Length: 154
Image (cartoon, rainbow, N blue to C red; front, side, top):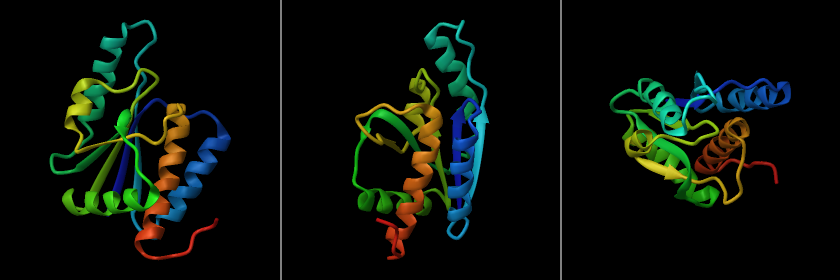
């Protein structure tokens, strides 16, 4: 099984990179994790053009049969137990490959959203797209722990 996270931009903060590395290590018991970064579009571009540019690069990273979940403010919110079921079903439907897409500061292009099998909203609160990587990795880790009936810290 493989989890692919396609996201716009790079992370420069050491503490975030350390947290991401920790959850990738924890997830290695269950799945391989690959983070694919596409370049942020320049701020000088109009938003629609920036979304199109980032979106086409993101879409080029998705294999045709992969199950795709976009992280979107307009997506569905769900408790961890339900998310756990969605993660496992996503692997089953996607030929053992689950793709999570995280947009940049401008969000996601309509083409990227339309490619998604599901739209997920982590919270009504807004997180930076860099922090979203860490949060979603922790939630996928939690999803596996729930699925396998394993204890997780409280």
